[in-house]
Amino acid sequence: MSQDSPKATEWTHEAVVQRLAGEMFRSALWVALATVAVGVVVWTVVAGIPGLVSALIGGVVACLSSVLTLVVMRKTAALPLQIIMVAAFSGFLGKLVLLVVVMLLVRRFPELHDNALAITMASTILVATFMEVRASKRSRSQMVVPTPGNA
Image 1 (tube, one colour):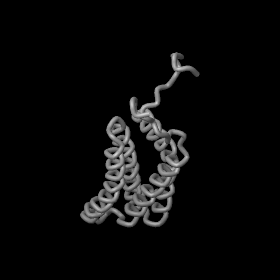
Image 2 (spheres, helix red, strand yellow; image 1 turned 90 degrees about the vertical axis):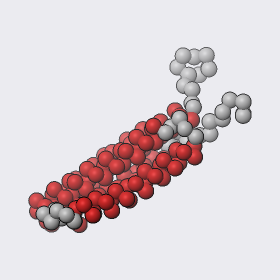
Image 3 (spheres, one colour; image 1 turned 180 degrees about the vertical axis):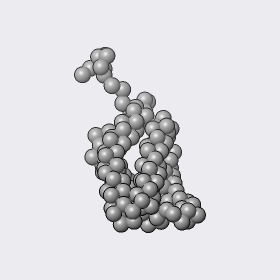
Image 4 (cartoon, one colour; image 1 turned 120 degrees about the vertical axis):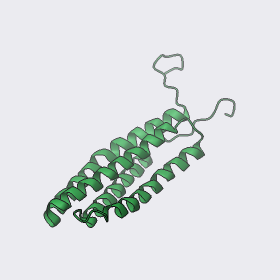
């Protein structure tokens, strides 16, 4: 395809990061939801209604934190690479802090099941993060895009 073609895609750093974030989202979405579903079923059998509610809360918090990380990645796509990497690392660190904060808050509600929430949330975060890393490694988006004048 020639550069004069209207269908020629300009691959900027921002476009590459946007595409990578989309691939990571598609890769992690269904696996994370399946992990939540398994957690809900297991904890409903083990702990009844408190296990069901707690697993749902943990799964929703984990899924939202994973989506938030990818939103941050998309929003910082136009920024320098170092800032994108700091934002991605901050998102992962934020997930760990979120786990601790949620667990401290859950202790105030004795009707919720601590283990159901924690294990469902932690497993969903780990599975989603693994799938995001896997998508990143397999991505065709990873390339060096030289800036004009530096080629």
